[in-house]
Amino acid sequence: MAEPLRWPRVLAIGWFYQLKMQAQSGFMIMTALVQPLIFATIAMADQQAGTRSLPILYYALGAGIMGIWSTVVFGCGGVISWQRHQGMLEPLVMAPVPFVLVLMGITLGTATVGLYSMAATLVWAEVVFRAHVQMADPLLFSVSAVLTVVSLGLLGLVMGSSFVLYRNSNAISNMLEYPVWLVTGLLVPLSLLPGWTRPIAYALAPTWGVQALRATALGGQPLPDIGFCLVASVAYLGLGVWLVGKVEHRARRTATLNFQ
Amino acid sequence: MRGLHRTYRTTVGTLRRRRLEVEAVRGIDLEIGRGELFGLLGPNGAGKTTTIRMLCTLLLPTSGTVRVLGLDAVTQAREVRRRIGYVFGGDRGLYDRLSAYDNLRYFAELYALDPRRMRARIGEVLESVGRAGREKERVEGFSRGMRQRLHLARGLLHDPPVLFFDEPTIGVDPVGAREVRQLISGLQERGKTVLLTTHYMFEADSLCQRIAVISRGRIVASGSPRDLKSAVSDRTVVEIEAYGIGEPALARMRQLPGVESVTVENKDQAQVVSVQSRDSVQLTGRLMELLQGVRVERIGTREPTLEDAYVALVTGG
Image (cartoon, each protein chain N blue to C red):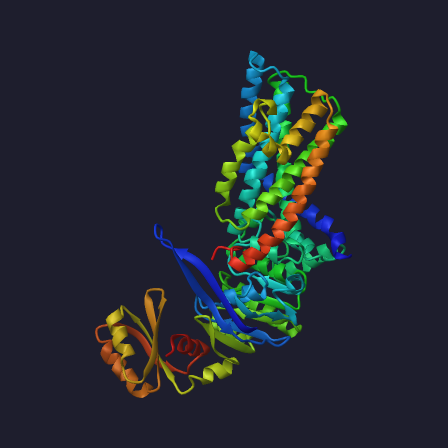
């Protein structure tokens, strides 16, 4: 089989084993489940108290994406530094496939674990807050959910490729979690945020992902958001491929693949 | 390898940070023939692992050229990677949450093994390293020796023509270590080119056709084990097993006429002191005089071994 024809297999197996490992990690499950539920509870309780006007599902979906983002942020930073600690980065770089494929399998697998969050917040909204969780367009909702996970996974690739170089990448991850929640309108509408945050929001996939999910769940025009999510994914992929090549070369030059 | 150099840049200090350059490899010229089992020996920090990492495409040389099977390890890295296997020492470098089988399955995909042969090949390599039957267990429960065997299995998975073993028997029990040595020897018989680093001299002596001794980033000697031993063939080694030899006594031993080197190895409670000398007849008596008041269990002379040659080379004795 010609080498490029094997790439989907390499990606799929990387995704599968990453998902298998992350699904057994107590830390990742806690990140994906507990934190979004806390934020979802606060927002949904506010809504029931009458201080928020949008439907409960709006907040449940936002909290679900918050969980996916947290998983990506901690997963991508954490997984790579964890791989280095485990001594896995060298065997992976040494494999004769483009390193970007290996890394992409890891980040997509990590983002997929975040779907726990989405499922958990929707069930929470239905069971605890008695919201009627019914999607306006279930098919497009599923497409949007998959696309959101893929785009966040590819954004994770861009972050992860930079993180290969830095041994204290966990610190960077911690800094990125909250601002992105805020700036991408996961819990409050973008219109409430200052204008200067808008370009940042438009460059980040969670913005388009949550808008697409809300439009498909609550009714609206999801196609522009799905389109922008797709464009963001392609842009992240291109940037990720370029960055990973640069980063791999630099890591070989500066000897940062392994702890000495 | 031709004129191979590798310098690491680092910083030291907390408030007043200072840049530091460490020359790990300082001009190595070495050629290893196809099908050869070659040993690279040297103390910790001598540059062995740095050299292997450059051969494995994991590090770029600061200057010089590295070629593997005629391919440039810098510009043709992916081609080189297809043809080499690297067996790491130690217990890191595996996915703990996956089973042994899953670890190998993942790398089988990365190394583009034929999907129809994958399962059978994983079974074969596990069998060859004595790990068949436990492939479904998660790696986190494996002992260090078991992990080491899994490293071996992964290195052999794609049947590469060139293999690098970095201290492959470290942490492996004596029976397992013997099996690993047999496996390495068998690879060479099958025409594989093997580069081995080890701290166990008997291992290098029994396995390698040629050896290079590396010290402070330079090759200080190379040749067959017999050639290296011949460099100290005019010497005799007096070996003393005793309890409580202090540093002052060791310092006086080093100053005795004819003494080339003195090394100490702790063996349980006892010390085993090896004194290399060109004059063993008179030396034994002088040593006994120095050791008055010390409990000496055994004293005797023996022919120099590869380890003695190695000690002489790396200490300049």
